[in-house]
Image (cartoon, rainbow, N blue to C red; front, side):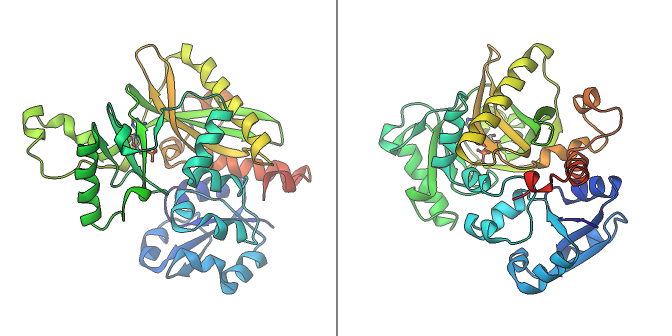
Length: 341
Ligand code: AMP
């Protein structure tokens, strides 16, 4: 009997609820400090208590997960708390393609995959001297937007960079990646690609609610300059969005190009959930500034299905449940090896 396991954070509730709905045994690797929270949910069959998530690399956890024939569902917390090489060394089967997670974490590889997918991406700025216009400085790794800042000149950049150094958030220029700021309204496009049916499903779209930047609109512009703090882009939650129907065709095309490019560059390709993240400009042109090569937390909005999954399924279908459904189908058709790495 296969068990579905994930780390206690990010979208763990959605993933394990979906797994339970599809008839799987559910396991949660849970930090002791969060035990009380996760014990509230009856669809979690068992908790493996740890002091740190890195313990899943240790024999005690591995034996337990092997005994339960576990499949790990990776999410943002796995990526932010472990090095790509550590994730790749995990011996327990990981749903999707664990090799592509390195491409998500590494800025250069990320850019390459997006370019191969023929997505419009903002230009990167390799040297602060070249800043001439609005740029966003992003910290390397999955910082979740914390400590990101905007700058319009080298001088402005240096002042803000030094403030982050003082706060201990970065060591220097090498910890920052500069990219042209993309104007427009943000949209985070959620997809699921099934290698079993070789089909791409558009599952939903959300917007992120980021502090401090999304709170700035409440403060009149003259007072904004009085705030003695660099406004950050730290995700606090997500809100739903539906797109103009005329945009959907291009949404599918972008997703398909991404899947094709991933198949070429990172075998076995982009299997399972992923997200293209960017902005629509006034001409409805989408600029992609990021991708996530695994389930994103924005899917937590759609536990009972989304305005898009409702067109594909006659039952409530969350992304978590869709993952479990894929494992169920693959198992039945003896194709498990195609959907795990
Ligand atoms: P990321 O870590 O790339 O997902 O970025 C975190 C947040 O920073 C995003 O959700 C956006 O609000 C913002 N952001 C990142 N890159 C850009 C960009 N090139 N232009 C505009 N906003 C951006």
